[in-house]
Image (cartoon, rainbow over all chains, first blue to last red; front, top):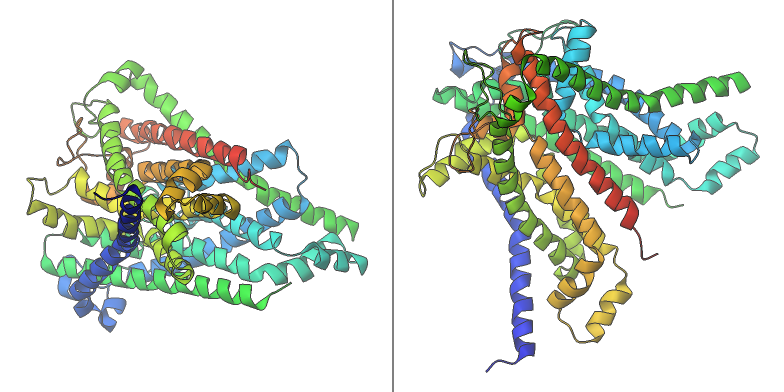
Amino acid sequence: MISVATKNRIKDKLFEYWGIISTLIGIVLLVVFMTDIFMQGVSRIDTTFFTNSPSGLKPETSGIFPALLGTLWILFLTASISIPLGVGAGIYLEEYSEKNWVSTLLEINISNLAGVPSIIYGLLGLEVFVRIMGLGKSVLAGALTLSLLVLPIVIVATREAIKAVPDSIKQAAYALGATKWQTIWTQVLPSSIGGVLTGVILALSRAIGETAPLIVVGAAAYIYDAPDGVLSEYTVIPMQIYTWMPDAREAMKVNAAAGIIVLLMITLVMNGFAVYLRNRWQKKIKW
Amino acid sequence: MKVKEMIIEKLLFLCASISVLITVGIILVLLLDTFEFFQEVSFVDFITDKKWTPMFKDKHFGIGSLLAGTFLTTVIAVGVAIPIGLSIAIYLNEFAPKGFRKRIKPALELLAAVPTIVYGFFALTVVTPFLKQFIDIDSFNALSAGLVMGIMIIPYISSISEDALYAVPKSLREAAYGMGTTRLQTAFKVTIPAASSGIIVSIILAISRAIGETMIVAIAAGQKPTLTLDPTETIATITSFIVQVTTGDVEHGSIEYKSLFAAGITLFLFTFMLNNISYFIKKKYQEKYD
């Protein structure tokens, strides 16, 4: 006969093991799968993979050159649109807006936007940028769509970073006769730059991995040249992978896997950099 | 000087108001095209028709088949993510050594940072062939898409729930230990009830994320709208339908084009509702213990 206390202790121990399994299972699966993809695709990764265009006829020498350049274009344009807008909005909400129904509305609105599925942003972009503004299936229309998508991330990160700056710093600036904007520009922003940057990098890394909204606003499947301007047609790395994936030929599967390796490398480097920045920034600044 | 300050404030206000413009834009765009859609298709058909075939000659517009697919993949994903995510949160909070918790959290969050197209590839090329060894299953099916999606949304549940459990005051936990409870009893009788609002928020957010997920289902679950709850069949979700139509060229003003927005607004309504519920739970019950 086992006592109740022993039973409870056994249950407790069993749950501990289950907890360890749960914690590791996702990560282990991810690692297993990454290894699998790596084995599949690594043989295709050489310089020609980066410099060649994709080709339906010669899968063995197909490359991601147009997609890589397209991703860089998207990255650059999305950054230049979403950073000023998002940081500006974050500053306004944290430093200027008074606590009233407008600010409550803005806050609910931003939290809502963060939860809107990315494909809905695609539909918005399709109607507004592609059709009404007449941008067509251009890299600019794609970047505008992704900018709207990542805006909430940049805004929230900016607010969090600014919130962490102590009041005493601002009071000191005011005491020296600085105006509100001077205080923000010379004191608040420099001391919160680490947090802002972390958010921006995470937002951009999200933008690079997005496929669905770009399919909707017309990233094309068969593009053989790099974009030559903001109104040029384009494709991006995830889109290229998506195009290769259903192809039954073995070499195409290898290409898709190799494309995934490149995409994952970029995502991992960006995320790693963001984590590094956050830690460094948190360590350096002790108020 | 004063003028410059004013201009800057106005500019910053403009930035902030763009977020409102986006919401208004989304709602207007969806509503207008859906309105046009319903001038050609009756609302009753939309609700009751059993088929969804806007791309065929014989056109049917029964949203039910897309909703069934969305429901199916979401239920599977959430069914995986809730038990695992909550177990992680409880384990990290009550059982795990402190250093482990700090190190494992970023690794877990990486699960949500991996681009979804990668998960789609995973579901299609690894999970489906694996499942085929045991059960009779279509090459494109709801099951493997749902399972993989479940892995992806684990961190949504584990992270937010863990934060909620962490915020429960130590005194409550210690009072329980003082009564001689085990860690497991403390978790289930004290900390989980105390953190329930945060846990519910995390689950709602994960559901909303699963409903809106696109690439995994578009790649691994197929693109054939079917009114079924059988997870081994090929299906289509609202999101995968939108991808399917827009992958090709779709002519503006055609009924296919309009059907995109009718499907889109259905999706938007669901996620909008869930997001707002979670927002209000969070606002109402957060930090009761200060």
